[in-house]
Image (cartoon, rainbow, N blue to C red; front, side, top):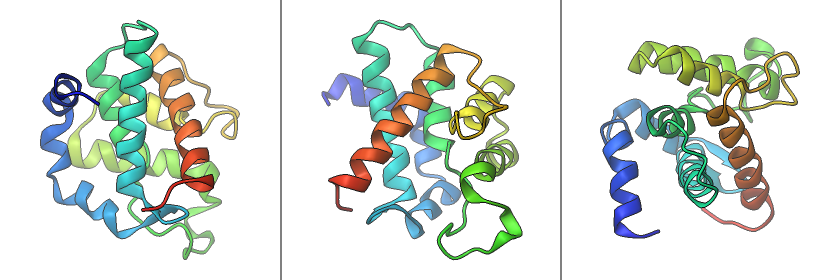
Length: 151
């Protein structure tokens, strides 16, 4: 990724990247040996690339913030019991709730976080292009992390 692209991303989410709650995501493994933080960074980058490559003209604030915070659930999903419910179905709402509390995100960003696990969360499909981009980027990143990447 070139310097201009990195700058565009950091202009939107740079402050959040330094936040202690976001840094806390480094404590949890997401896929294979990839942390939740690294996964979210991978998704941010892929969302950015998809948006630019296909000239989708997505709202960069919504897309970058949603991508960074889509897995902002802040627990180890490998160790929890049913207190959170079945992780794949429930973590989008937990992440959105946390993002709303910590960063006061807008409704559109909250919506794309809640819908990022579609079709698993059948009743919450993406309702905007930013949501569809995030949903696709998350699936592609998750697959690559699980099959080929190391932390």
